[in-house]
Each structure stands twice: as structure tokens, then as C-alpha cells.
Length: 289
Image 1 (cartoon, rainbow, N blue to C red):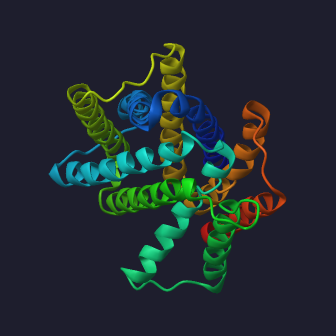
Image 2 (image 1 turned 90 degrees about the vertical axis):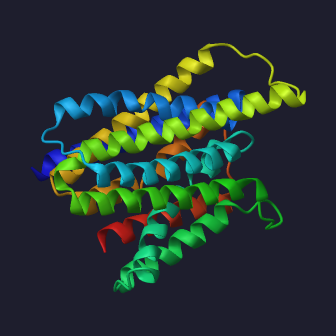
């Protein structure tokens, strides 16, 4: 069974990295509101199918409340991360993804007074150090355009905390929790998008120029890939390989760096590449410690 969990984690890593890479193409053309709405909404499709594939699923009011909270964190996180993706490279923006794990550990320390091993403390330090190096530009100046992405990673970390908390209590609500969290996140984003479009129309603000519908389909593909990745995480939890699976997912910045170079011709400074490597090591330590 361990082998199935590892395979699920590896596939999840692949689909997450593909979805995140495609997200850059959509966010810079459609903006963070529209791209986040499309991609989060498309993720509902595979997660909806998972409800029928994975049983049992128990739904009650508490699960819905937790899903709503997780969905709000999801929506805010996507808006902020995609705000950076509009103008910044996918490589240094998504290289910050392991900050999610740091948020989870910090929450355990500060809010739950959990004990943390020396390896986990080292992992925290490495993740923050790696994130700092990734956000530095020539002359050791901080790239302020990546600040929204950093904040977005924090909200994604809070999303994971809520979902994990729900899974520890409602063991038979795994796919339901994932599905409704995604669905409520998409609903929040759609409402915000429609409100902003209405406001722009009445205030006379210039509208974003029309773009090809192919970006919608790219966003659809990115969202489906992201939803499949989350679905595969369900199998990681079912096969009790969460720690190892988390360590595998911590490798995503490496794939993002490769994809960014191949598809967008991204270039990172040597210092930023060192930051990516350090952040990956920190993410692995946090999960395996």
C-alpha cells in the first residue's frame, strides 16, 4: 500500500506543477480575478467525480462550515498569488510554494503549543531563507512585486490547516471536504469577479482588452490539473503516506524552475537558484522530521 501512496504523491506533484505552470499563461492575459475564478472553478470537475469514486462520504453542517472557511482561504490565496503571476516569472513566484508548510508548522507552535524537532526548526529556517533569496534581485533588493505571492502562500497554508483539522475529526468526509472547499472558493471568486466587473462598468474604468478564448481553455486545463492533484492527495491520506507525500510535493519548485525555463524562458539569478534549492530542502525536512 505504501507504493500506491508514493505513486499518488508523485502524480500529484506532476499535476500541481503542470497546473501552476499553465496558470502563468492565463493570469498575465486575463488578470488575477478572472484567471483565479476559471482555474479554481475548473478544479471542481475532478473533485466532483471523486465523490462518486471514493466512499464513504459523510456530509453535515460542521463539514460545510469548515469547507466554507477553507474555500475563503483558497480564494484569497489564488487572488494574491495570481496578482504576482501577472507580472512576475512563474519560477520565482511559485518557488515560494513551500511557505505553506512553514505556515502549518508555525501555527502548530504558536496556536497549539506543539513541540517541534530540531530538524523541523531547521526546515523552517531554510524555507524562510530560501524564500528571501528567491525574492532578491540584483543589488540584493527585495522584489516587492512578489509580496502578494508571499501573502497568498500564507492563506494557502491556512487553507491546508482547516482541511487537515477537518480530516482529523471527520474521517469519512475526505472528498466531500475537498470538493466543497473548492466549490465555495470558486463561488467567492465568481462573486468578487462579477462585482468588480460591475463596478468597473459603472465607474467608466477602461476594460481589459479582449483576448483569445484559448486562454479560457488553458485556464480550464490548469484548473483540472490542479483538481486532479488534490484528488490524488486523497489517496495519499488514505494510504497513510502523508509525511512522505508532503516531502515529495515539496519538490515542486524544482519542476517549476525547469518548466519556467523551458516554456517561458525564465531566468533566475544564481542567488535565486540557491534559494530554490534551500527552500526545497527545508520543505523536505519539515515533512520528514
